Length: 301
Length: 295
Image (cartoon, rainbow over all chains, first blue to last red; front, side, top):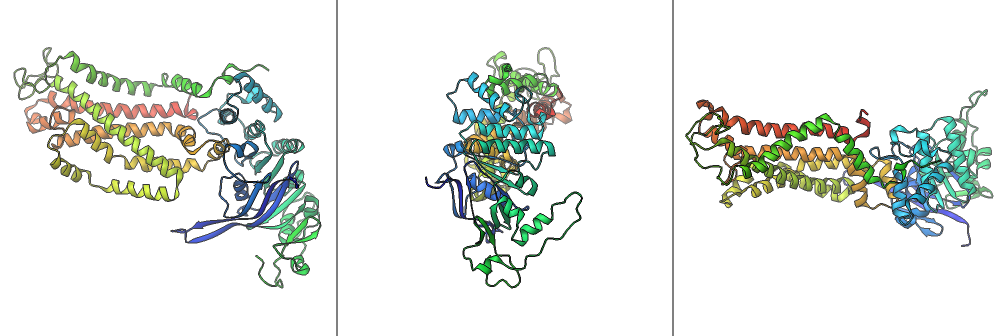
């Protein structure tokens, strides 16, 4: 393959039908395009309701796509056994990810049943323990316990260990640290950095800017279902071009610094450059959408 | 690091063993099941021990109070109440198992399908459920009664099973609906499990005490409905059941004549079966839900 894109979204759209007979349509995700390369973390940042989780679910094949295309390693999303061998997700709430009536290590058992039925039991147990150690947990502490006996950080790391038992190529991490405390959060983020070093593509979905910048090479800023700015993380955060990105950055509280209003965006790059097709390229790789200023002409939404 | 021995064991067996471990230590469950088991064995073995005497035969002087000869006394016609009682228990369990079993099966199929699939299948099945729910059972039974001259226990059980499932289907549907949006269902899909296996292995175990309760309530309900139908004269046209005994007792003024031994045993047995099942159900919830366990 020519490109090294592991994940590619091309004008992905999701519309939900609502109302009594599905008479009304709500667009949750509107023509979103970006890509994630192997060995790279891309953070997808947006507020609640911006459609970031929907994008994650569409990539995982849990929600069907209304329009556009998603390809993983060049092939379209095809939910099923083979697809999930290389594409996995970790979700926000670790307590909801475990079936409360079963022991937590059942998540490993399901992987064995589906993907490694031929592996002898003792070898499998050794693999599980190795994977659990890889996520810096003590196998003796977490195996054979019920979910309610374990902490959120332990459960979340076990889910990452579960993904490690497969031939993973792409991991969708949907708000995986939002329910963890600050120190556990950094541990889990470092695990994602390990995965990146192994050559995995990671899509890190978050609403937290600080965590987004910690890992990601590139950042996609999502606002009401559309991409407003995307590019290398240092450029997006160092030189934000879209009013929404600036508001977002201004909203991060800082120590020893008074609250400041976001610097105003005075011109719309999109209309200044006469770009077409949704985003204007400011510097190579750094794209920005229409700033929606009052003097922006035409409808680009 | 050494592996704990439980780590390598296939999991379903561990769960089953564990459920059993807590089941035998649960007072409510053991008591409830013991009562049901005693009555069930009475119904199953009693008729065999009593020999081939038909339960409605006139065997002794009428209106005898309980004695060593006739444990539960005799009716106004000299029938042995104990013989009727054990045969009636057998019929009652048969109707309960048949009616409850059929209803639980339909309720689970409809409830799981509607709740998990949602959308159009859900709309269609919910409509069917609501239609069955509002059918006046008694009126239908009168019509059926007109067509079928001779009714047996099987017909009665079938009829009860086919008409008593809607509330259970609605309950299972609602529960499935809420469980299917949980992340562990998504995670099971990411583990390559298909719809059927997700329902059987992720959703159903989560509500196993609930499903068992559904069966228990449907079983108890079938027993009560059957007794009521028998009591108003729409029961089996031949044989004997606890409900028929109550009907006969009322019809021949057992209460006014002071023949308490005629109506107390069947009434107490119906109450004991249904009540014991409810108590067992409370215990079952503690067994299946690890969070409710006290040890």
